[in-house]
Length: 296
Image (cartoon, rainbow, N blue to C red; front, side, top):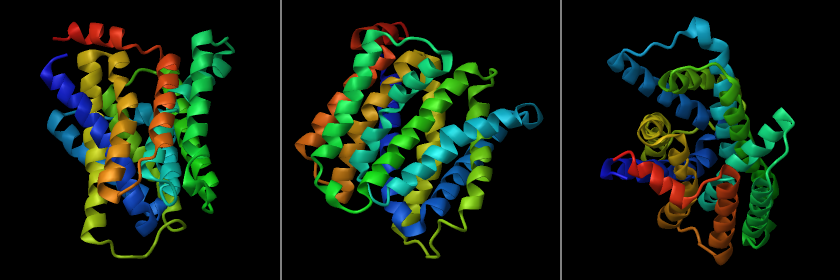
């Protein structure tokens, strides 16, 4: 792997790991509705500016329905669910639950196509369940009110990403940048009705304002640009490595910024979940390094 691709991969992992930190900071203060509307709105405006510079067209008349579906399942719904979960769960917990998305994707894909799952995939799914059980079963916060529903919300967000993944495989081919840009405007429209009901009428502190700005522009707008560049340089399979790195940075940011305690079950549960995800996706370090070597 060349240095530039490695920097992009680590940067994207760190940025998406930070998204859970920013949600944990912003959701209790602003409320999930306002926080996510600001997130997708800022991302849409950022990508609009980029599209003007690059002269990229959305072709809304042709693709509006596609953007709405993608915006719902890949942005609006999972973002909102994680924002509600962020009022209760730690940054570490959310980032690890997010890593189960490929497992849900494989399960949904098998049910959708009525196909049998390979033994490797079944083992991966079992490991994913075991990993989540280890993560939550030995967590002291489980005794707190609202923790179980918040975990279900986090898993629901990962499930939504799985739906989006399978939809994208069957949907008509649209330019990746247009998908990102169009889906952000669609998500902003979808989330807007929730703002009056799930928002807090407060003036954010400078710290919270910076967290919201980072969530919208950096963790959504810039992150999409990095992700699509990685796909272009390394291929979709190698770019998927970011899924396994996000929990590492999520745990790290939660500990460094919010003083979250890193217990044995956090790391152990994360490792089991990531291993299960790797089996489900067919990822292997050997194939990863072989594919990125050709990108030099």
